[in-house]
Image (cartoon, rainbow, N blue to C red):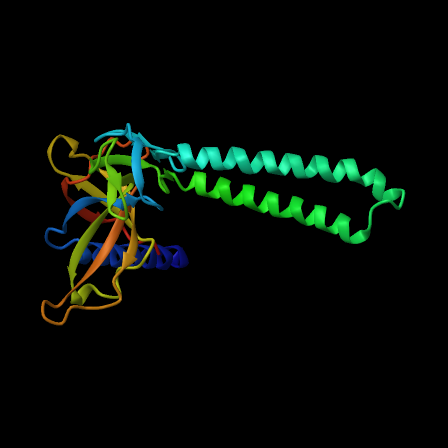
Length: 247
């Protein structure tokens, strides 16, 4: 009985300590702003005239999707020509293989034909790469938030479209230096957006800034909140609370 009493007292004390630590972290308003987890501005690998760019503000984009194509008539013609040369070189080698086996073709002549075939294949590969460079694919899944150019315009190294990833969302929280060491990556948080989205969303601490700003006596953390259905828009003000610390 005495052992059970001691165990209960210890358990209550431990829970109280964990609760107190959490309350200490949640002291005051921990305000934040929901932001995209990724934000990119795409530019073309090569210069050219835009032939296709149908995406606009608010359109969904999948990772690997072609978002812009340049005019590529010259590159397509070059690829077709180089592939025709490959086929010709293959037929030439095949026709002369019989002569080589009969000893009517020297090793040097056969090597020349094989080299011609290999060079034709390399030229075709290069032409294919040049053609694919006329397309730009999105490296992330996300939403178009801005388009800078239109079909028919010349694109060089400047960006032509801006894409953001809304799943997950991130928010930066500035905390007083006295809390440093109590917040760790992976800690659970509850996020409360403002407005009609004001309900709890569960997230985690994604990063803790390793530096404390001496002037303000603060440090920053970034929290990450899943947003699979993209119900939450970026740009919302929010506040966070730390989940109870489990011991």
